[in-house]
Length: 117
Image (tube, rainbow, N blue to C red):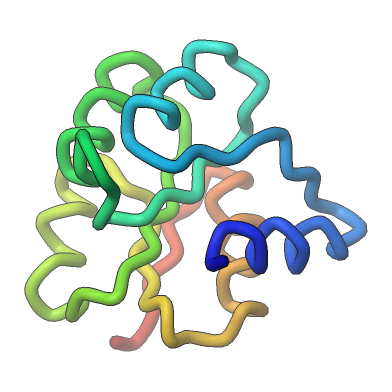
């Protein structure tokens, strides 16, 4: 449901294009291997290879690919370690969808997106 909602919301943005989605870390890495990505939006809690392992694999395969982490876990405990591992942004799932789009746009320009939280 979350993936479908994000796909619909992001698909409505005139300057963003969704090229795929993945149910788990392995499928996300397959998308990275396929190559047509400017930004990867990834949940930190995924079945199979979780977000931490998937982030490590993504950064090993495509170190320059910006990764936006979306999570329901508290930023105070998880954001900094994931940013140090190479994530370009860490957002809470409870946040405004517009913030997700803004983060994608920001990291696509080569910058990090850091929220006050």
